Image 1 (cartoon, rainbow, N blue to C red):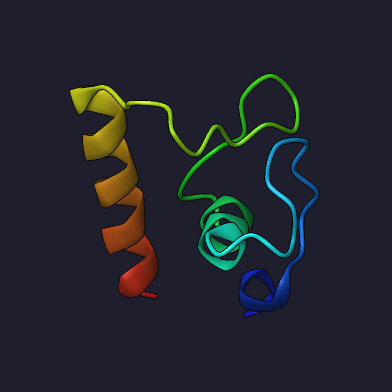
Image 2: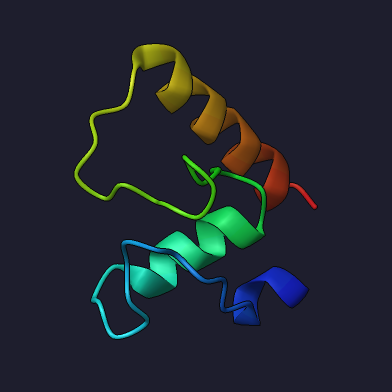
Length: 64
């Protein structure tokens, strides 16, 4: 799957950051989206509906 090896650019998370691989996979797989263009906002709180949406997308991806 292409998304597993994708290396998107984030304006606020460098490729050397410990969380970069997880963020890159989540965005590349369509499970999560960037904010403000290319920002991931690692420390941002998510709403309940955002969390449910992310889990739902992840479950759908797992069934492929």
